[in-house]
Image 1 (tube, rainbow, N blue to C red):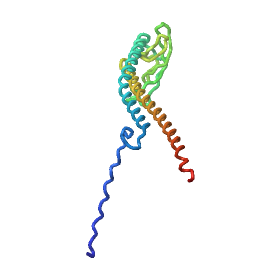
Image 2: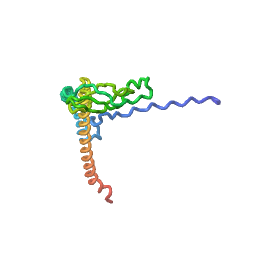
Image 3: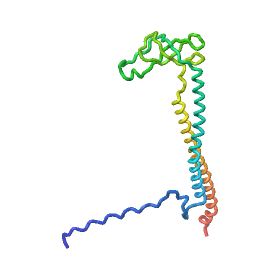
Image 4: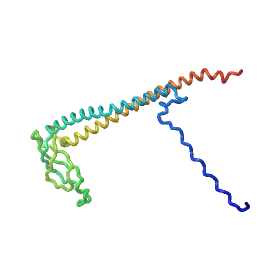
Length: 210
């Protein structure tokens, strides 16, 4: 009828779902080659091996690291001494003396102390801001009479052992990934060589005139 509004166009059909390609090397399909299957099983085997080896690697590395750092902490505790030192100069003043940052900030200053050997030594250590000359502070000193860090605490020992265990786990997975990369390159080179051989047999049929 004249003047009648045409119906609206039909909406386009929904897009079809693309075929899944997950683990395509393990699925039967006409394009799968034997090398694809070998590469797929190699990757799966390396993945399972890495997952199985990770807990053992973490335990062995963490345990060895824990015992190593425990012995180190004991040696430090036996060879380092917590003694009193005297400032031989005024410590640096903080720009904002009453701020929270000032209470956490430490500045290097020269100090004098008597070492475990009975001799007088001088060194530099971090002290609170604005300490006047002649103030006393506590410092850790080694058997050589030099200022050093305090012995490792049990928390530091556990933290370092845990860090070593994590590094060991990452090393296992990195090794597996590297092995898979090498295997993939070997398979790729063999595929290229096979393609060259096949092309050498097929090319004359396409390039030779009848």
